[in-house]
Length: 222
Image (tube, rainbow, N blue to C red; front, top):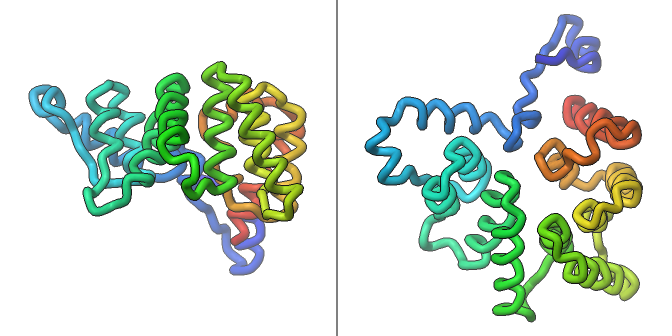
């Protein structure tokens, strides 16, 4: 629980906020996932635990399960949802939360090879570049970074956070922080992810911690 000075002053009473976005997977659903698994018999868990979530609950169940079957089940989404969403879920949600960069990069590279002309948003490319870099595919991550720079130079809007993700994957931590600072000044929403595991190498960096404080301070005010 954290007191919000702004809201406390506005309402003239102490106002405390439960900051669920500080959970490992970015939402309150991690607690529910752990509770559900702990109250499920070993026999049922061995058969696999599934969820129809394609977002926060899928992340939470994958993190709580920490097993290959949980990973497989947690990334399942309703059949009516498009294939690209399932692939994205593989890359971003399940494997990223568990730090399985090799698996994430394999899915990302396969996806890119199968659909090179698909709609690749800068944010998705940025996260993919980070995944590739963390998996040791430096040259591929550099290609993603070059593609993002080319888009920006051509006049396309490329959020600073996309560059930050790739720089983080490449180990260019100072550059990553520079781009995160630019992202904050532009009010880019992806900064809500900076409490997740991939950003652990930046923890303790005074500039990064200042950005985290400003980001979540802004979220509290809003």
